[in-house]
Picture (cartoon, rainbow, N blue to C red):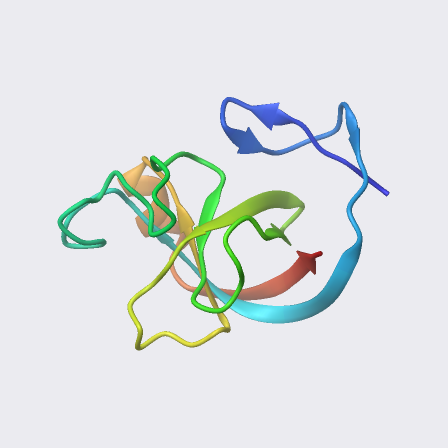
Length: 115
């Protein structure tokens, strides 16, 4: 069982129990993006699913919108897509902080995908 809570709009820690069933584990290529037209499209504040951008969103081209994934003990929700040149192994984490996103770079990390 996992216990997660919202801090702002980001799912990040322990509080009210939410029971998640692990579907599978994989390794993904993790990047970060910001709401800038050069990193998104001409609607940088709207995700591919139609939601407003917020901390706690991750883009992936293969998982259904609403799928929860855990990367480094933080739970993210798939609500956006990446450029079609990126395959299913890529997870692009949304952040309003440009300097943080640049600092994080590109890393390979374990990704746990929940049902």
